[in-house]
Length: 167
Ligand SMILES: [Zn+2]
Ligand SMILES: [Zn+2]
Image 1 (cartoon, rainbow, N blue to C red):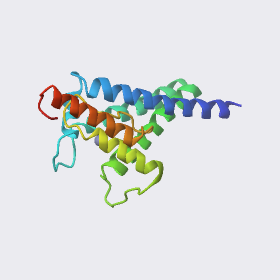
Image 2 (cartoon, helix red, strand yellow):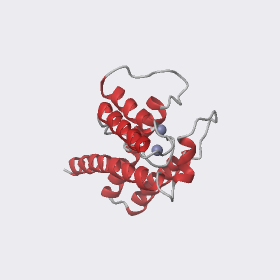
Image 3 (cartoon, rainbow, N blue to C red):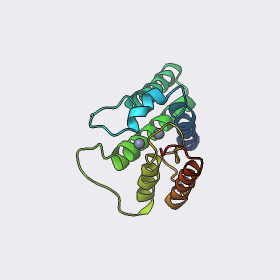
Image 4 (tube, helix red, strand yellow):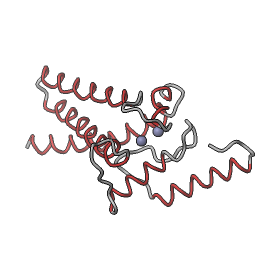
């Protein structure tokens, strides 16, 4: 019985984490508070590590901290939350740092299917190098790339019409 609840809670936390990641990426990392750490991820460079990687470190500390709390208290539901958060971190690293940004030591780019859509959606997030005006802030749910392109195009046209400098 407990195993069913454990699995359900772990999965629920995993999907909830996409909402947490989206909100953090949209309002903190692209907000006045967190852009300082996120900026170099949106700028071209040839460094191995980015200041932005600190967000991953924070996530890993939170995940590990939850496992420690679960171990100290012996509570199964805290262990399920810790596992959900950590699984999300692993999938995020695989999709974002692996598939999209190819930070692994080999080249493997998905040519089709949902993995391809994930890559396209996040590449379109990087179409904008400034704090404002970006699209697609999630990492596991990929919006339709055609729709994202249309939004970007409309924003560009809007800026051109307002005679503002291009992003
Ligand atoms: Zn971003
Ligand atoms: Zn990225």
